[in-house]
Length: 97
Image (cartoon, rainbow, N blue to C red; front, side, top):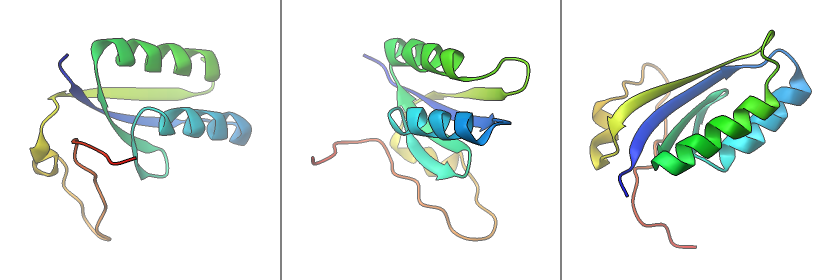
């Protein structure tokens, strides 16, 4: 299965909903900033992510942006520039559990 890289950012107006969205996103990707995640997803996981977020957000008050960056690859750092405090971006690959 092919993995695609996504940048997901959200603006949630209610703190309780924000917390639920944040907890949901931790299951799908790497937390980069307050409301920003990097996710490497198969097509199936992408559909699951969207369905999960659809059920959590208030469609008239909240906004979620899902930006497809293309095929996932180890050189993600070439796509993301950081100004200021260095960020930590974990590249896709095996994880020891």
